[in-house]
Image (cartoon, rainbow, N blue to C red; front, side):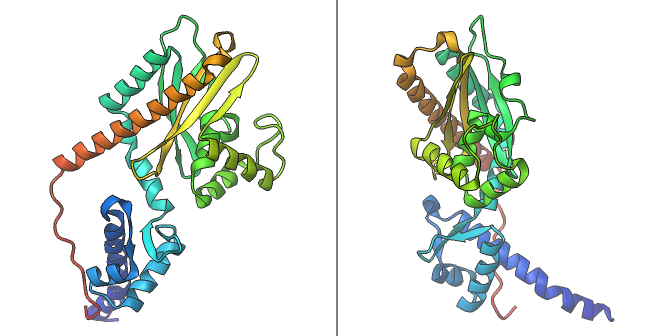
Length: 283
């Protein structure tokens, strides 16, 4: 094979990849996360509708784009997962940790922040509330623990996308009688997770420890992680449960705002990207 022939053979798949990435850029940065229609994408890309539709179909099948049925395309669950992974650096920032530490100080109890990566729960930050007697967060929320045995894990599973939940079940399996009593089938699991999702809260009060967790979303309502609280049962006052849940939800909003501030600062200091080459069908 001549060298020119090799270049010609490679040109088509590379061109398709470049077009696909350009489409992902368009739909990811659509104003307010509103997404774009097939017609809008086709026009901005300078491609035929049929070509654009085939590219979008592939992106949707692979989880990088999604169509909610209204004809509008947005970033898919895999893109959201990438976003969480990229946010890990922000979790180590002074601002994020100061916000988490401030929440722990206000509550007086131990807090934990966990996220979901590739179907696995990952604890990324812990904070002590400063009480003389504290719940051991390493023991309560170890990395190796089943996602079903923690309140943060249940929130993550309840609020993630359906494809991500499938990954969770593939990795952890269904809950056993120890990690989540009363759940013996996938249907029972989905019902229980649906209830948690509607409540926006997962809680577990035992004879020794009380735990609760709420989801943390971006401004576009994309799941970032879960904020959990753990404290000894003897400090539990049922009359103050709603106030504690409200504090958790307020904390989730503050963490979300902190992460968005960090990401905005990183974007403003980054060099402006070069204009994206949008090849036409004639390329």
